[in-house]
Amino acid sequence: MGHPPSVHRWNRRQALHAGMIGSGLLTLPELLRQRVTAAESPPRANACVFIFLFGGPSHIDLWDRKPLAPREIRGDFQSIDTNVPGISLCEHLPNLAQQMDKLCLLRSMTHRMNVHGPACSEIYSGRPYFGPPVTDQATPQDWPSLASIVNRYGRSPAGLPPSVVLPWYAQFVGQDKRIAGQTGGRMGEEFNPFLMEGDPTQPDFRVHGLELPADVSTRRLQDRRRLREQINRPSTTSLRMDDYYTAAFQTLERAETAGAFDLQREPRPVREKYGWTKFGQSLVSARRLVEAGVPLVTVNWADNTGMDKVSPHWDTHHDNFTKLRNDLCPPFDVAFAAFLQDLSDRGLLDTTLIVVSGEFGRTPRVGLITQNGMTEPTGRDHWPHAFTVLLAGGGVRGGQVYGATNNTGGYVADNPVTPADLSATILTHLGINPHREYHDQFQRIPQQLSEGLVIKGL
Image 1: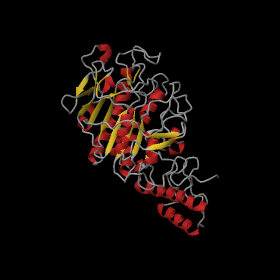
Image 2: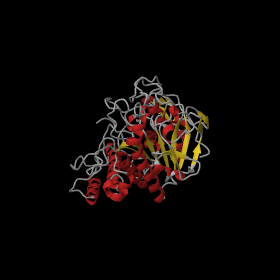
Image 3: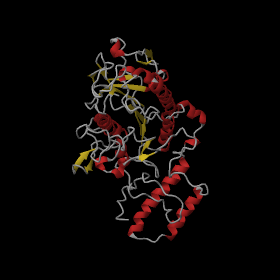
Image 4: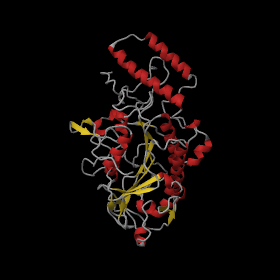
């Protein structure tokens, strides 16, 4: 079996068996782990839901409208008023327009990477990509994702992981590895977040390894735990394994009691308000996880356009306006608006920071080719120089626009914000010092969690 890992974490390569290897109950998946020790900061109720719109949504068509620009820039859509005078959104976001009083449109996000994987890495990690942009796929040299950082340094109730990703790790069809920047990378794969994988719209959806067998109740699980404690013989190895058993039992008991991973406990009328889509039901799960005390929940966009090899998800290289109007805006608009309202109604919005971002925006001019030669006259190519991030909750004042782009939406004109600044802001909100250092296993030197500055004036 090798040497047991430090009690500071559960090693994902040494899968926990919940004290049930000898009793024949069940085995937890290797991703299920919980640190035994706490982070350096006191417990906080603050949480963050990070929503990643994989592919790069067109900021100029959605939330940074330029109605006075020429048609080839402003596009096909009209603008509509929101419930905040003077702020408009795309006509295909009517529900979100009525939640504008809860939103901040950060229109001055910027970086320089126009290739998907490295750009995703920059947003997920808050760090400029470490090498040439020759692959979209994760490598051991990747900077650690925010999800992994929080899994290592965040705090959560006993038995629940500090960081959860759902409903999948973003990945292009045909590739054998997840998109770059979603792992522990050079900080260590053992800090990868807990993956809540699957299709939450399905009636039999369960988180693998967290459900008890039909003949084992929570009380019976607790009885087995007490029995094991009575017959266990103390030794250095058994004491360390006891840490794993204790943490694993806590996970099962907490998950069962809180129902944080069990969507079947959610009233159907509430679920229907979010829309019966992977994205909508993932947001329902995110709200439940926040209620249970999980600090960071990452929701990766998932929809049925993923098989399109040229324009999957928000990567609209062709038929930009048709895809936004028919496939992308409706489910996002319904689900995200319901999510904001639900958090507000439950008193969770004040302490929960909501962040919505893609890896970049789209070209100001329709049909302009900047990176992908398959971009058609009906599409928009990649554009990292200026794009919009949506913020809400967590002390952020709603009903405002932060930063600005020029009259074509192509470049930042005021208050530029980098991925590093965004990461520092999220970590600070979660009570994690963004300048704390960890050991870089790739360069073998200390590295700060973030080199950015907390965004001021929000």
